[in-house]
Length: 61
Image (cartoon, rainbow, N blue to C red; front, side, top):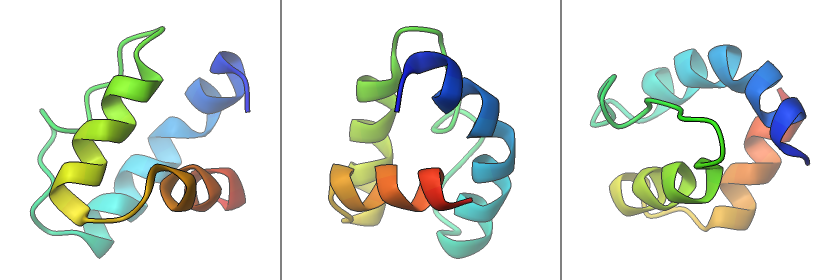
């Protein structure tokens, strides 16, 4: 998934991630262009999911 695709799906994904993982905050889910790996790492720390699983979850939305 390229940066533009990630950005386009991100708003939908934020809501679904917050529903599934209550510990995630708006600050955790702030997206800065070019920082998708850092963002995924932050979500990974909070959820315990692998980056690959998180990417697939976002891609499947």
